[in-house]
Image 1 (tube, one colour):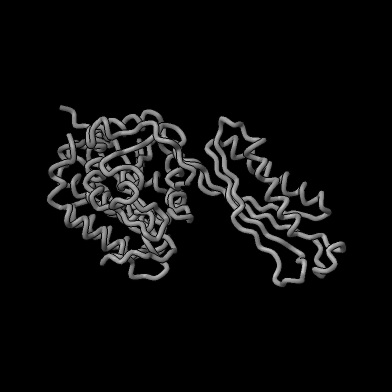
Image 2 (image 1 turned 120 degrees about the horizontal axis):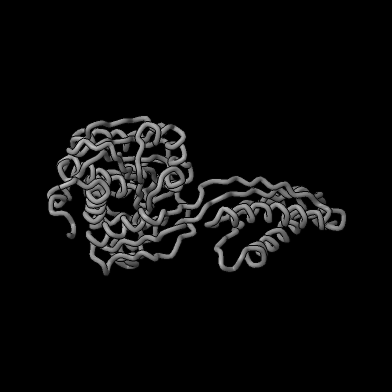
Length: 395
């Protein structure tokens, strides 16, 4: 069965909602307007319960099927935007300079609202409880972790939890996923190099932190190439190098910052220990000193096998066998849906947003990006069919 026919009558309304969200983006934990609209729409659409203030600005909607079962499934959408300027010129572009829905969370929120409406209108099609998790602050502020810490699964417990993200570069009407690790962990580090400053004309009396820092940058590249098993995946990226303030002064200090990404906990541990060892020892070789601060952020997003197969079966029912990938390549980006998957089995899937050069083809996190409204019926139908599959009515 393809896109559900009962979804089609309210696609125009959902498109309008999505574009309104896009025009009024809000940063993580600041989604006051978005959360208010989500709560209002959930009530309008017939949700049995609407809970607000979860992880500050999060919302949880509850829709119960007709059968009376206490089995439950969770569906998650993120709501926040990115702190960047938009260059698009269409009418629904951001009205807030420095804020933009450049990752499609406006579309994710809208598709879950559409699913809420469908499920409330078709309670006889499933037996159990659907918890609709509208999560704040996915973009670097770990709203998923905060929701879990705020008692999400104690208050709205589920057997399985699912997340969905649009994917530019995947054709519209296609769905992709993989069992096991699908998104990397993302950690941050800061290396502060302490040397000895001097006049630029007298480098011999210095312990130049710029030289030390440069050597550390190069040495860090050996971690992945020579310490990580080639069969495993890892990335160490130095993305900032700050030192000095004058042309003729060798500074006292330099600061390096960057990220480490991996899929396996063992590799994650290795990256941290090796980064500390390399930085401190290289600095010591120059008679300088390095202090390393390592911050573990989002863990790897790991899909459980049974739930991934369920998602694949549902996807085939919605878009057809030929348009479902079950061996999609893992991504080195990170996702705080991982915190929910650490607590309950589930799966994270990618929904086609369009190919490069086409509508919806601009990559996420770019100022040209826009969620493809034509993807809305696929996302809503997937959520609806997933609920009907996971919480079937006994005939």
